[in-house]
Length: 473
View (tube, one colour):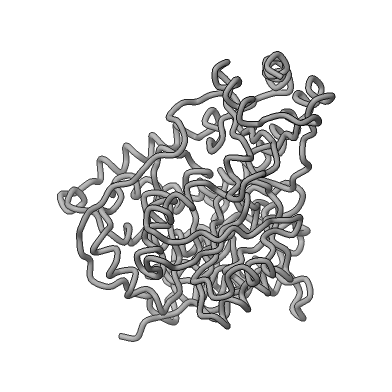
């Protein structure tokens, strides 16, 4: 039986000849035709998709009306809109290769605490624990002996299909479930890529400043990190070409550069893709919090522009659900599926199937999309409240960067001051912060504090905490 490849579904394009309603219609029709959306699956409500895409409600209603008129979807009142039951996909789902088993462990970067301003934590107080508990109880009751054996090293098939469908509609990614590999976190993802595509002595471009665990993983594998500076348009691709034109890969955070939160501009995205194609190099896109953009709708993934199969897309459930879940995922080019299956069989242990089953149910029943939309609104409010509370107290001493999205703030001292010393004093006082200089590869990085705002519930709370910081300056 031939393997099905999902139809290309690019992000909404304002310059395209087709109007937006037609592009939305084509997205869903393509996902249904390829089998990524199956009969009976729920699709986002028109209201939710209107907010998600930042369009007029009438545009989405027109697209949904066209889908319904042609028999692709059915409205079920309060139960939502579903793909028409009995509808036959035109092509079969891409089937994953036969399963195999093996094992390996991982490291740790951030503390297992919950401190004010702690980085890397979503709003834990607002997580829908009752829904999660109900789904968890149902998954436990449904567990069969086969579910208690060794988990698949590639990830639960149903979860891989849900991830592929979600990325197809929300991030414009053209991928099949077989291209999705479920991992136990970002480090596991990076190690998997390094074992599959890189070798000792290779050079890899890293953003400077950039996420510290990336260079730690590469260092342990004896792969050379090449520091590439970041400006207001993201990674300066021309500098990377100057420093290491024949590098084997580049690791980028295009949606919100980690930690500066700037977005990789379109000319830079195209230049990066062109470099990778010409040099047969790989681009590793770390889309760790691309959903959380507050000034406009989320930017399409860099992977959605990839026409030559050079981009590997890394996502995570840590930022949208919670870090303790220890689940992430990687989308690899179709040509590399067999290679990643081979490496997974040799190195991966597989993530707990029960956890994956709960996440699958959470996504399939629409809770995942609703949770992201709710968190986007909440974080926009909490960011505003945190900035107001901090500026009210620290305005003479610190400047807060304006950022389009993300889950943390950048506070820059107005006078020369060591961010590392200030971070140490804050941690002694029960507050959390990270020093921007610790994220820099080259010496002499700019001094600044990185503060998570997602668990700051009000301006008053931010103000109280700012007074504690003031005493430490």
